[in-house]
Structures are given as C-alpha cells and as structure tokens.
Length: 314
Image (tube, rainbow, N blue to C red):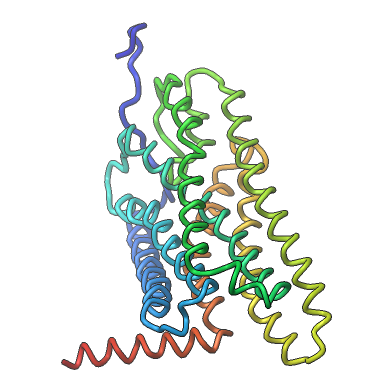
C-alpha cells in the first residue's frame, strides 16, 4: 500500500507469446536450441581468440569481446523467456523486472559502443597501416573496451530510477517477453510523456551518434580501399569490412525501428518481433557472419574443435 491507500503493483505478468500449451512447449524447445547454439557459437569465438596466439591482435580481441557481450546479452532475456514458457503464472517481481530492464539496455548500449570501436579499428588498419601497430595496441584496445562497458552501464540508471518512482496500481500485465520501457510506461497510473520522451531522445542520441561514427569510418575505408591497386587487396579489405557492416545493418536496422520513435507508439506484436530479432536472432547468426569468410578464424575454430575432441577422448 502507498501513502494514499491505493494498492501498488509488486509483480508483473509477462505475457510473452500467448498461445496454447502445446505451442508453448514447441517454442520452448525452439528457443532452447537457439540459446544453446548462440552460447556455443559465440563461446567458440572467444575460445579461438584466447587459444590461438595468431589472433592476439586488436581486431580479434574486439571480436572476442563482442562475442562475450553477445553471450551476456542473450542471458538477460532468453533464460527468463524459457522459464516463462513453462510457467503457469508468468510473473516477475517488481525489482527483477527493473533489473532486467537495466541489464538488457546496458548490454544493448555496450553493443552500440563496441561496434563503432570495431569500425575505428578497421579504419586505422586500412587507412593508417603504418601507424596502426603504434596507435592501436592491445593495451589501448582493452582500455577502450572497458570504457565502452563502463559508459554504457552509466547511461540508464537515472531514467530507470524515475520510471520506478511512477505509481503502478494495476493492471500489471506486460504484453512483451522482456521488461521494456514502452509497455512499462503504459501501465503507469499517470501519463509520463516527459519520461517517455527523454528515453526516446537518449536512445536516439546513442543510436545516431554511434551509427554516424560507423558510417563515417567506413566512408573513409571505402575511399582508401578503392585506391588499392591490387584486386586481391581490395577483396580482402571488402571481405573483412563486409562482415562487420552486415552485423551493423542487422543490429541498427532493428534498433531504429524500435526506439527512434516513442516505444508506446509501436503495436505489441511488432515490439516483440523486432526485440526478438535484435536480442536473440542477431547474436545467433553473428558468429556465422564473422567466421564463414575469415580463414584465420576458421583455422582457429578447427584448432578449438581438435583440442575439444582430444580432451574428450582422454
């Protein structure tokens, strides 16, 4: 009870994907397989970079950190969604909901900071090849990665704090599989256009500033690549940058659909599909995008596979 005697919400109900029990079990199995494959694919990249000394370079260190981030990212949503499929009540406590909100958005923001850092690394390697080993060494690379993580985790505590101070007096049903600001703000007893607008502006600034940085970096990279005299050199550069641009397109495309406009303006079905894509599908396919056209990564992954096979035989 609050001071005015109105009962307040102590837990929320995450509707997730409402359907029959049989379909819920099928979805559980589907997302469980996807979850395991995501952990295995990104975990393999982390292990490959760690075990193969040839990959102890900034480009692969960033890739390993990105894969580790993807593992953390899916763990903010998929385990609770799997539990939800088999649950009768589908409830999540008030505090757990906002903790999920915080970690989900902090991980996503970290990804929007790591991707420009990867683009900057490719810019230095291609446009400043002679100065690249001096400028971008492993020590600086790890410091920049740490800065990305710390900055991202400092972006959302204040907006989340203000949302927690809103009165939630019922109903308490969130038409989503994750605690997202749009559905949460829709449950507030009083309208909060200021908070909703500030969340939208913060998300827009993060997305646009980082996206423009990536586009600027790759514009300079493209100019430099087109000046390369050998066709083999151009193909190698395009192959390296192409995989990163594919990931950027998938991630930022869905983010812009979801968060550039105020989130409450999107229908619940679209919110769930788009959120599912950038939070679950892209972490699943990113290892394929980064490894299929990279000979060094394929060789390192084979080495990990051989080491695993030898350890199992023992």
